[in-house]
Length: 437
Ligand code: GLY
Image 1: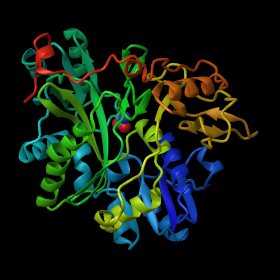
Image 2: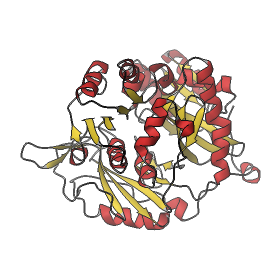
Image 3: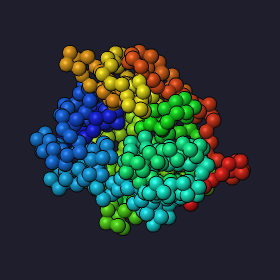
Image 4: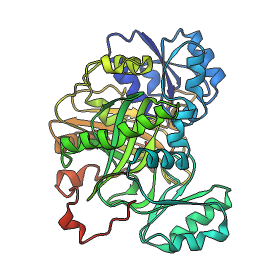
């Protein structure tokens, strides 16, 4: 099977590496890819958001399966165009991708499906902002009501910071979504979904703030780990049965059945899981850790999802142990990153027994030097018999990487290793507040 992977981040690098381990995959092309992906697949400079260009490339390289990584092409209908050209595609239709592309649509689907989520209000007029803020918080959750790669979200106990962010978004012409704050540790559960068939992957946890101990602004994700030692296997079943399956069924009922990867971002509160967000694609950087533990052939799973035969495929098998991803970011990220710096020590990206370096924002300079080309530059993935060992392996590997001005979090997965995370029970709820609807 010849596979075309669309996207250019470390998530797509991880997809390419996992596809290479599948004996049924005979060739991989990535578009546009990055300098790391180019070490493992042919890359082609094609705009991932141009349906016409993606279809032309898929036809040119005789792709039998197109895997679309990022949300923007999905929301723009690139998967529809690929399928219309008679080529199998892993990724939802534009109609189904609205679960990520329109927060109002996602809320409506969840309400109809009886799925718990935060109470929310949309503000599209600056004159309404103050009164709306008074109906929320503290803590305030202020989001860009569109696609913002995680960076449009501010979660703060400081009302003036919440107001500033809301006012800035409105000034840019973006409607603001205010949400009630959901208690409990966060879980990212990725599910392969083909209509009403739902197959969960390993649960993971993202670290969204830029600094250690969850300080500083939100980012697209600074690191992740999987599985979650503090989450019971029953909790995954509960999420699948009470959250993902009802939403998948509601999308089918509306005539926009989901085909691809449905990412449930959840807060595990005292009353059970509540949805923070749905995404219509693999999460980044959780995927890099999750796929490092996948033993089953990825191509087979993705092709079956695309073909509507997911129910006939064996559930995924996982390597024992844990994996973590640590993101190496450019100077000033998540602000405007400095780019063009030379990187050394990144290696060739292959996962050995302990670690791999995946590329996100990288490029090759004319003289062949590897340089930074984005905010999140590299991801170091560590694997180990347990989370502590995976952390040790990732952080040992990261010391060999040199990128001027770069930074990374030193505490990815640490709270879990130190047993500082627990799903709250009713007794502990008395010391906090849940504001869920
Ligand atoms: N891990 C955050 C995201 O993929 O949106």
